[in-house]
Length: 561
View 1 (cartoon, rainbow, N blue to C red):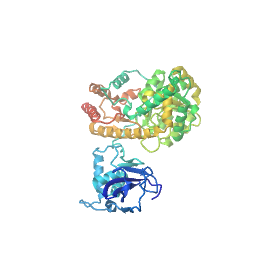
View 2: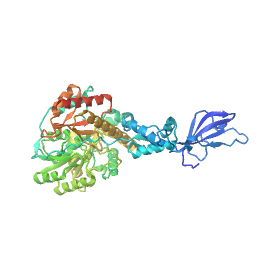
View 3: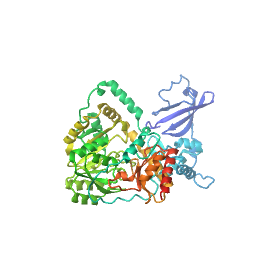
View 4: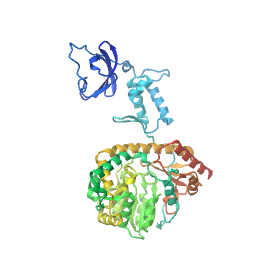
């Protein structure tokens, strides 16, 4: 037996005087049954696993000296000799019939996206078929896009593409820049988000159960025990160097080489964007943004007394470059605020070729880009999309992000790589909040350095993708006919365009009476647009209560037609 193969021996019941039956497993598959001397079996049912050319595990008590041992006899298992094409009563190969039964469970949501299906061996025992039959069935389901194999983990239900629905329509160009008006809607949303009795569809705030809070708590306790001065002194540096190095390393892997000295650690992504805007604008200046735009951007721009020019944005591929080119020609823009990866609220993601074109367009105009990359690590595919910063050669892209959606929203740790505006941003950071808590930066640095972050990201991506699929299915079931739905390839938010005639401001007020909060479309524009649209957060674990709340919103929308 090759030394590279892991093997296991499970001692079963005694077969006669001095004889025991041993089941042998190699590389996860049962290869045979050995009839061996009883001296090799110290405990019935106990399993030994090791990597060795010999069958005797190293921790096994050596057999007492004895005359010649009875040689072991190996009998192949009957089910391993069974033909995979053996026919069932339905005149189909068994693996096809098995695959069909598992597929029915997936289609009925008994096995939901992200769930682990029974292991190959367990399914073999449950169904009374061979291991190769189960492998063929699972391979068939992989080819159909229903299962995915994860190394050293097993087979899982693959998160499916969002249900077929027309995409929302792209917004219209904005005639001239405008100041951001005030309003009470956002205050209502924040108040509802703080009330645990409300179903929070409005806030893109992930559920606490999705984060490794216990591990982070242990790291926090260890950090304070090892150096209590961390909580007894001011943070007066731009960044805690170990954390800055870890962030820079991750961007290197994402195709955007950064030096750790280029980073400023901030209090969340919101402060990072605020500092970048202050570095390149003065009150009264104009900033171009995508439309619809995250209402938090509009609040920040309002607080700095800036004007906004909304640029139409495609729900699939991001900002319209033709409209932006026209805006650059006709207006004195001081900055362009963009989210190339999984834009909030549309979920659009720009192809790499379009990101490069965007950078060249801005570089020719000498206009800086402020890039919000907060959802960049939450892709559903295999490859993390590159940030716009990957094409930056002149320091024009001011990259901003945080751990708020991926790891620890309560820590409020963000960062910016502001390029040529580094010194101004450092100055504004010092005058704004002086520094960012070092003890919290250390905890995150330790977590990233120990390698737990990538494992956690894989888990949270699967959770977001599975939840988004269930939300999309429910919206298609419960909302009025003609509803349009975005199809993001990452993040945890959906943009919903309801039929004309549905007023989401009124829908918001009616939903609040049912203790449900939604984010109506006009919040995402300075011109009171998107009145029949809303943003839906899918960051809440799925439950019957969530499904019922979506049905309530859909019923309220139907009553308006």
